[in-house]
Image (cartoon, rainbow, N blue to C red; front, side, top):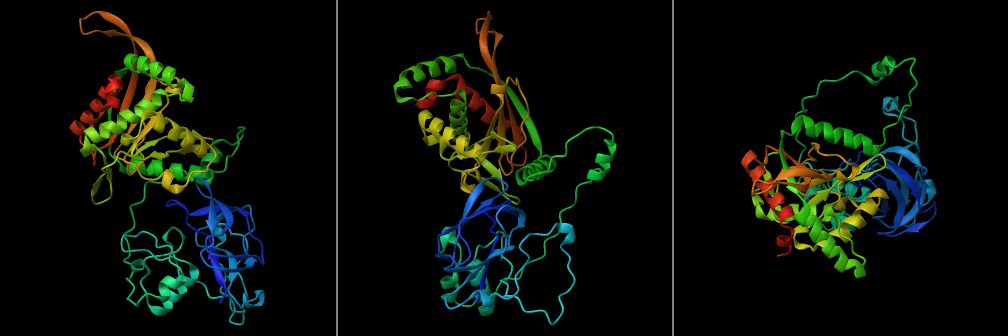
Length: 428
């Protein structure tokens, strides 16, 4: 039976994508693990691998097609002994706009299409179970619960052999979820456009990344109870130490930035204040053991927050090299999902743009984010009461009050400040 190849969900937030490029053509033979096409998600361009073996019988979605919904058929795979004549009727090759999705019922005499796979199943906790279309069909026929099967395909995907070897178990019925209360709707796009009739403007179409940023930050400001803690940090000792290190590391072509020290200081602070190394998980709090620190990277049309895992265990030079690599690939939209997902804490640094201070929005499910401003020469009062000039950097810690209370947030920020004002101690 011909197998429909479906548009995959290549990231947790992906609802649709662009089929950027086909790397196979009709008639080509593919095996499990072969790269078939490149797909642009809301975050990156990623390769899509075959999970079954066979022959590409028909390509349903042309390369360059935008707005292809997750689980929409993009091609048909033929198994041994099958030919193009076995495909029968196929779905339209291009996605229709949402407003036109309702179609008239097909007449009874219409030719039968290839059997479609059941909808992508979900486990009891609501997460998607990844399985091939053929595996889903066999599971449905055998009455198997896919969430109870361990997949042996690429990235843990459930394949044909997994379900053929599994014992039948009753599938868990989906429990209807209560609809979340809707936020008050603002003026419609047409109403806003009407306000500017007669004025010159350019209408910019929202791409996938901008839609996700808008949705997530709206969710964050509406559902996360933010509070803010502010401190000034004296940077003179750090700047002198950085200059000395960079001089000694010049032969190795290593140049440490102030941001590298900030990442290290935050990672160590999360170890020093472990109760603050936590995330909100709906009905519970998850306390992390490692310091996985995310850093905001601006790219054209949006931003990424790649995560530096186990930052507390890495040297300054290792953090610097990893951050440079992640930032470069983020700007090229070449990050894999596991490189920008997770973490408990984030850093957003606008100091290089001359911004003195600002308040950053928490990226759920993180417990906090540090907004970093520019260092500037300012008069300060020394321990002896004398006025002096020092390089001072202003930071603001945005905190999720569900995860971290005020006193705990203050303890975390004080640890960050102490690490940055005493940089030698970070190497101990």
